[in-house]
Image: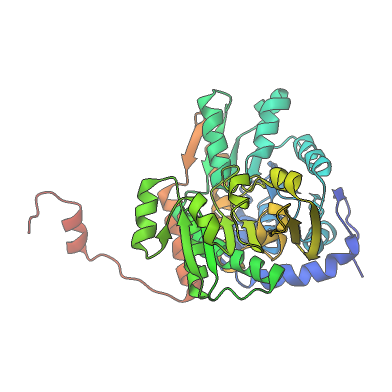
Length: 425
């Protein structure tokens, strides 16, 4: 029997999916000991009591555990999807039915529905915005200036979102503090690299059932996400090519043992293409024209603009869905380009996103960033702030403890040596 929510309003696929969602949320919680420990502390201390929090995130089992922790902290939380294909409908149902958390998210929702949900998120009159790509913050600034005074701050999860926040700050329109969760060590070293690496390949394999061993995989971008994808693709036996615009990252990729070349050359050789840049039109018409028949392209960066699908669609003589999340675009020359996940995040469109164990640290950063903003309300100037080092260290220590790993500590002599200029060799 599905519990009936007492107050939560919602726009989800089916409330009757709640029991299935509850099982999956609890399964994920087993792999999220840091968030669980924070939730236990939050339940006692209520650091977010009376704070309205709007979260625009991928509605997954891991996000559900973050939302439950925020509610335990006393927050009046509301959740919308940050990506039309990333919502897990059973999770959305469980949050509404079992936790009275308003959720506005439906897997496969169209753009009009997504934008309506963004407006609903702002109707919540948030004090804190948890954003994934900065769409809610951008809409607030463009359309809801009268609500700016309600805002204590925002937290941002992604590289794409941070780029947008930097642009807002440069233009003088960001009038409140923003916490850069993306660049916390316990986020990007693990979430971006190990999470994106594993979940991207998981999404490709689920969508296609293709054998990656022996294939030529082209990874566009060698930031932390690109490093993870390249590493995991090589681990599955793929011959990996990296494309880059940053000369330092290009050298790093070369020294890590990958071939490095422009996309114009890689396009001729690749069997599978993955964009992880955060930029637009990384794969364009001139690249499609020289690709092999049956080349597969997908995105694991952020928005669905990394691959120029509009141009591909205009050129195609036929577009046919050949498997779930797999569309074949036939070109006038008879060759086919296979697009996975509609160019949206393949790890969430065709799979389940990052493993819970890695999202544990990412969402611990989100929870502590919210607490930090409340603790420092009125003390922070408008700007973009890194997660304080002590919070990063706290998360890492909690994770190590949960993993049963102990590490060394400095002896008094060592501590004196590294903190003194008078003690020589």
